[in-house]
Image (cartoon, rainbow, N blue to C red; front, side, top):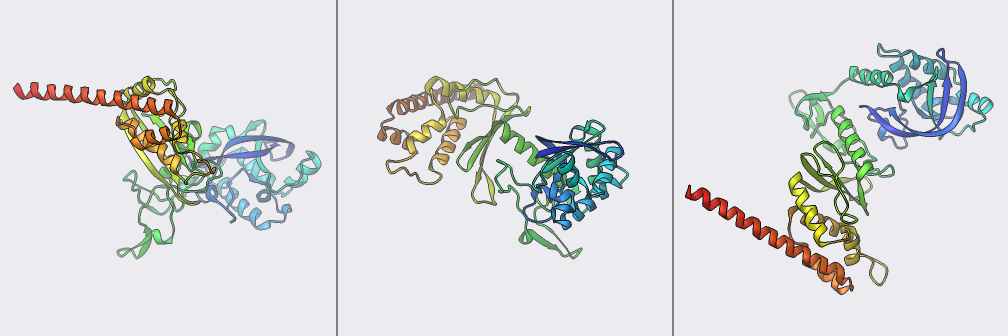
Length: 381
């Protein structure tokens, strides 16, 4: 909560009194405390509360405004009742403004303002210190403001004024929820302005963190579209994107979602299905018995690059989504895909889909017959 993963380059080791001990150039990805604005920053001055680029940690990089903004944010946390001794040690050291000097003359590390720094105090890696993480969470909650009803949880909560990006990958700036002035409405009773669709800050952090983790662990990328599948226990689940992959039986329901980046700033849910574990097992069994290659491979065979080396934008990605939809709904695969496979001389793949459609037809007819029998028996009784 109120943390995000960032890439760091340098570790600075300090004593409990804030005295410089050593520094080392070693890269590591850590969970760092952030604000709702700093996690979405672009070119503005929005410092993270603790670990940040060197240009924020010292005025010697020629950007005094960043250093002043950073120290103001760090002092707010360090001077609160939620502060820790390790945090005060970092604050006291950075308040001297000598980190660039120590890195260059004592650790022989070049003064590059783009380097991101993390800290150790008395041998304790602060990014792994649970007490420091809990301290920051309590500090943020104590400064809660702009309370309204969260439209997701249906409870009163501190409302997020911005939402996170970097959902599908670190380079993507597209947001699932984007707020601007046109999203604000006037409350005639209080004569104040609020968001037309308010979402709680904690709810936003949790939602984006879970979604980002699911996509990074098991997301399947196809152009600007990304698919992600998981079960009720939060475990990742496999679909035959690359073939009839082995998968354990999921727990509870299986959720399948697809996200599409329609522009540099907009991300939307283009597909959503929720099925039971039994339905999932039936879908996978039918595909495995009929087709021995993956959905992505078939879509590329049918509508991939043409003779001139080009392909209409989004055709392959939308074909993958259509095939996934048919798979989960236990419907026949589209006839135009089979025709395209035949035209492009992928007869083996076309025959596999034809056989798959035969199995689906038999299964549906069998299920309809069972339903008719149950209905007749109930009607007689």
